[in-house]
Amino acid sequence: NLALGHALLDQQHEADAIAPLDKAALAGLDAFDDPTYVEATARAVYARAVTGSAAPSNLDQLEHVAQRAGAAAAFARALLYNNIGTAHLAGGDRAGARAYFDRAIAEPLTRDDVELLAAYANRALVTDEPAVYSNGYLARLTEALGGDYPAVRRILGPGAFALLARRYFA
Image 1 (spheres, rainbow, N blue to C red):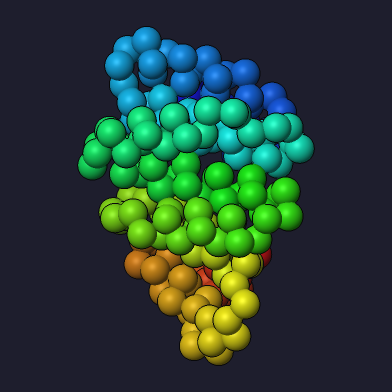
Image 2: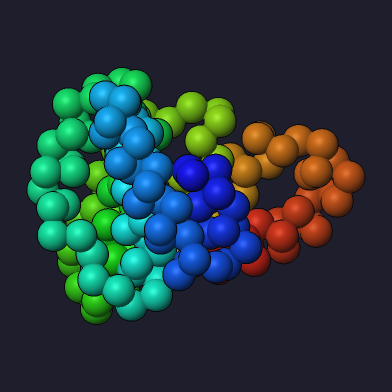
């Protein structure tokens, strides 16, 4: 169910993704698999935010489980914080969104966590700091993305890759 929900999100079928993600979250709970529970619920939070549905009322408890899971749930926790930030932003709460994006960015990432680069782009959406743009913020994001996809960067060339990255982070 988690893979199905994730695939539906990738295809921008957010409303259809909610039910399988909720089932995946329950399966994670039943199996005492906190990282799966947190990841599935984090993705459902995003799907609900994008579709205008209400966020779950148990976000405090969900954050507690995400913290309890420790290093094993670092990806899921960062995803959760990013997606709660997205829900705050969708509701017009820029300060709340900024706080959650900052928490997502503070989580330790690995080379496999390219999906979480969106937290940096989301943080830029709510910044009031012009220095973020003038100090090459997008260039640093593009460089990080290029490090994870060197073959794509080499094939496209630096200019086309930078354009692709700008569109990805837009």
